[in-house]
Image (cartoon, rainbow, N blue to C red):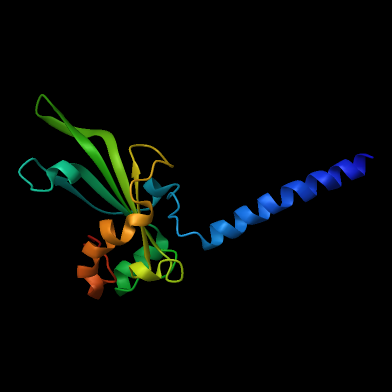
Length: 164
């Protein structure tokens, strides 16, 4: 009886488990970049109130790249598995000292030439604040990200470079 219950449970759960795995391998959803703050720091920048893009990108940003993306910064072609993170933070100024404030969002580029064919081999996503699940781009990556990145086709769709 006990073995029959276990078998019934496995039969009921296996399709859910297998289906989840199959979907994650073929999904175009960009994964959250766990541990990105321990990757290579590529560069930083500050977008101030004078910038026309201040409302969308105002604040202090840091760019991080995983090991595969660092190969791409060196060669000019990013291999599959490359991930680049743009971490945007508010700024706080008090008594003449400016520092990082709360996170506004992180933007992620994930290279997978088979999954992201329509967007130059790159998946794009924005995760709001400190959330690993609150996504701002989703299926709109072509119009919200790629159309702008297409201007950087000669650089494998990546803006900027690694600052030695």
